Length: 346
Image 1: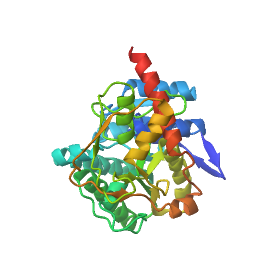
Image 2: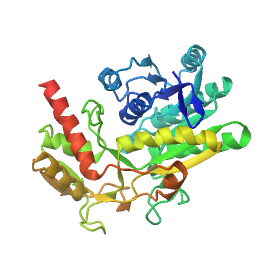
Image 3: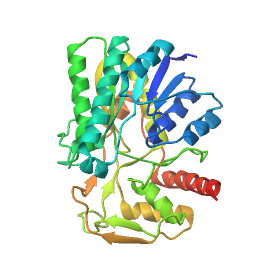
Image 4: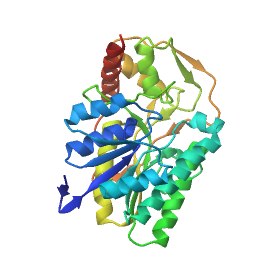
């Protein structure tokens, strides 16, 4: 199946990490728009259930390969069998705290995996890539909102691994003609698909705020720990730019289309352009769920910052894209997904 948008045709798209949180939502948007996808994932932070529910949402049978992007022989077989035309690269480990504890594991998986993938892409002359980067490449912002021209100074190995890959992509575009790459720097993805069938379902303890709040509301956790209540923000808690995962997924479709029009390297922030504090998110979730969220404000975490939100002018102008779903909708969709997941387990 091929999808034509303004005269541009797309062949099979390889989605690495396609059963993960952002990957699964992007696959749903791609399939719903008529694209043909092949997913490569090793289920390191996802599950078979995610794949089955993607198929249920889209009424498609999805081509799935169980494997690791560091396996060059497997990648070569995939490119031979499916004639991959484009790649959206999500596969990577993403816990900031875990990366501090296990930096070598993060560099091995994220950087070596990306190098292996890029080498195979070059071998098969497949030079269209959308790369999943992160706002962590900025580190502590010099000022907000954070634009694509802001200084890059990651404060943990996870962010450093993303910046290393960004530098590799920049050098690759300079060295070899024909590459068409979009690097998307996400801010704080949240929410779930409106069906309640896919959402953020990490193995072990979630690293992100919204799924932690949802687990407290569902009775899976006793309380929410809020790290720091004395920041120079409107209520003392940290402020972040939360973007609905469906808006984020749609940004990938826009980027996939744009790289045909603007070859080379595009680097783009994906966020909402405004910040929400931890306490504001808790209050919104309480309003949506009707459940009081017990919390305790404890000491700040090392490396945490007071405030970070995106300047999204470039994304708005270049991609004709903007985030449309607000924090309340993120909470509503998360609570629906969490409630349905809880019902399945009971």
